Length: 239
Image (cartoon, rainbow, N blue to C red; front, side, top):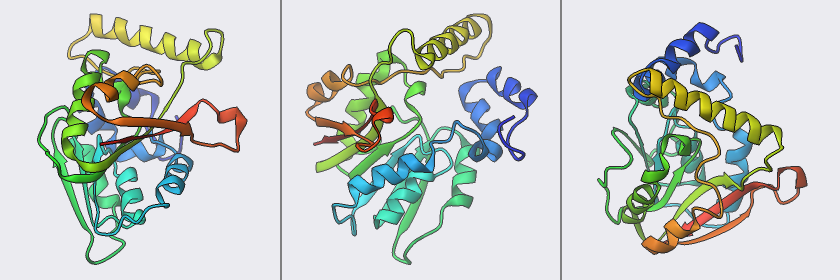
């Protein structure tokens, strides 16, 4: 549908009627040829903020790492250890193929598991997550942030991109709310559920989660020179 190498309509329909995990296992080989992958322009903008610091000999964690695009960004920044966690074995398999070490001393680790499980403690200088917040239900957002706080070293940062809510009359708002309504109906009618919703984890609504766990979050325009993209925000939450 989106690219000659991308999934067909029927493949997407099969994915949508699967569980979230199985759906991404099915989509994994063609995921990078869909609009669901975070665009490189986003990573380039985030990288421009992070390049102001020296990340050599630092460790990074990518939550819901997918096919490894954000992990590659962390490697490009110079992080010596980059860990990715995702519950889809298929996505992790593609990530393993995609990732290229930038330095012989850089280490890559891929973990199959749930991001809400508190498996790390004071281990990472940098935590990132992109394109995955729609899989975190509102009731789990505080737990998600608590897990990040626990994984960070003192002084470590959680970096991500979000937006503010769009006006009710905007095409983005109408499309997102229509999609979310369709997903809720789908999940009422079919099992297992497929968890994916748009316009979630928005600023400033989520700021209270960070304050509650002891992370100081600061939001800035992701593209300060592009007024039309003013709603896109780069957020740093520091422990």
